[in-house]
Image (cartoon, rainbow, N blue to C red; front, side, top):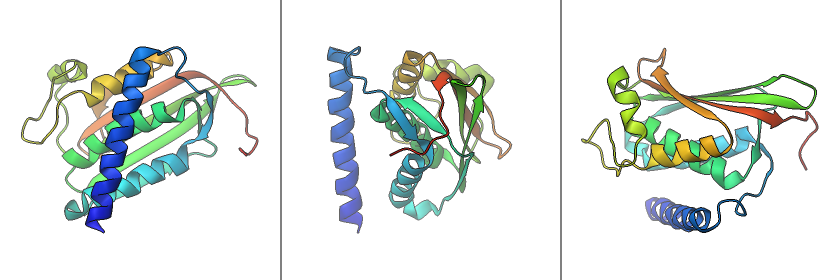
Length: 190
């Protein structure tokens, strides 16, 4: 099973590198916009990360109001949530939580709010802006290159979204994403 997990992670990394190269070459044509149910995608990422961080015995909590949908390129959402959840798992003591709500502001638009948080150490206010820059890292004791948050922020910004960092009521870091002006429909996806 561990070989399968390693192969799955290698394939994911290969897909992410290819995807980022595609975005760099033609960012305006690489977007495939469609409604994506947040819950199954988040669950898939969490299940993968539970395997990667099996030794930590992380408890993952998923609190998603139904229906929560992101309208955009599924790869963008995977990249953003993958980076934030990976960091949450990496730096938690034992608990990671993803919460999401969708607030309908008009009959056609809504705001999607996603929080990824953990029970690890909080990120000091003096570090919060700095860690969003390429190559910057708050904790150098863990492996990493310091590009994940920068990539996530670039993607979020490309959807006119916002990313903020705060302290979670779990005690650790809380990353809050807001995607405004999301087209909304309560109809089931096909």
